[in-house]
Length: 307
Ligand code: ADP
Image (cartoon, protein in one colour):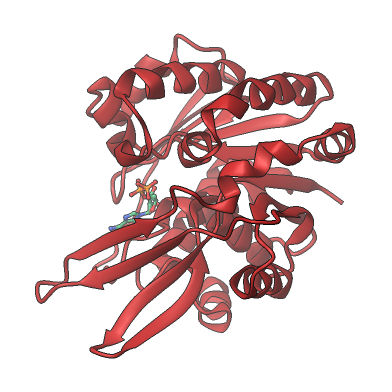
């Protein structure tokens, strides 16, 4: 059975339904990817690496991981931290704004749980995925241990996958981000950047610019996303442009890239060629942006993918 680990943070998502009612769910970039991978490729072991607390919300979140059939062997319980929370508000024009409470979340402590047994379990995987958000969330004083573990895992044959997913407010400075991203690009076997994310950091404006920027690094599989525009891939030295059919009725673009990443990686782990992997990933992303929230209801998602 193929196995992929997704390292990062899942949060409690609160969404206003009306003046006095909040809808509660769980979301976070790596978690979203793990869910969509599992839904499309049930035979792959899709596992989360994170820290929760011992509180009621943490228990519900862990239960939700299990419901989605995700591996939880590396979901740790911190004795005195709790999960992060975010609140989504939509104004009269349909514009969304996000408020976060995540500065002291349990997930920031995940690297504190690393030990030789944890590294052995990670080394048993085929891939380890982390994002720019994962990098921003782990505490700066645990980064050295994180990077050391990445090198150990690469030596053990684990493929390292990185999506830059840049969130400025999670970083102290652009310099700090660039320094961490350079380390990530140096060790990545696969990267799945979006043009918008890298524009903010490196001034790139197109998929071609992103590819040129990444040519400084030795990354075997580069998959560049650009919203409804075409996806560019460079895999084993072969360049391909993949046409995306724009969705007319976009409801909520949250987790488009996450769904794309999860389904793309599931397809590649299943041995599908790049063009089929992109096509399936783009279909999943298109389904997700026609529904509200990061995680589309399972029945709705599965039905749309089967159509
Ligand atoms: P991110 O969420 O990482 O910023 P993008 O916005 O680039 O990612 O979108 C990821 C993928 O979602 C795209 O490559 C595409 O397949 C799909 N997608 C995004 N927006 C649209 C759209 N308007 N119509 C169709 N597909 C879209």
